[in-house]
Image (tube, rainbow, N blue to C red; front, side, top):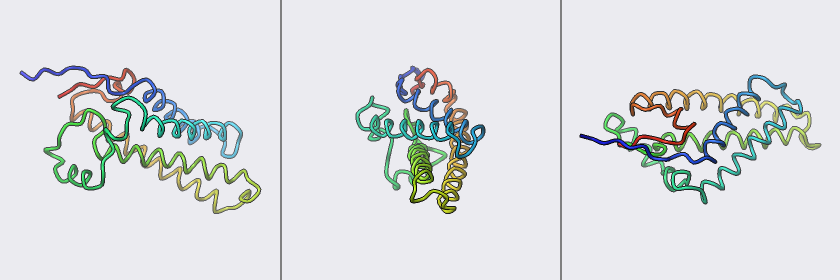
Length: 173
């Protein structure tokens, strides 16, 4: 009989980071006025958390470290080729790892373009605002894929990954 046990995968910082970023993205995309002070502050909070998460990716707990879950393109393609018989990952699978990096880079790009719009050099430049909006929309498509992927993997792994991002535990296989 296969004994599953719960393993502490997502540490407190990773979980606070995740839900803070979720909150910032939802507030800025759906509720705050573009260009308003709350939008700006929330954007900088999000960018600051992403910078902190990148640091944590090198010095944090085992499963928070990029070396545990971020792999090269060959591993991603191998994972996708063998999708039906794919191996179980305690942390992020190869596709999820790349999605995390993509989403964090989107937040940083939004922070940069948002900052640019407030500088003398780029204030009123339409292309910067258009780029900012395009990045936000591309990021939201990534967020949608992330949600679908998490729900799919929850079903495939027979465990609630969303709840795991609240309490930090995941079942081993």
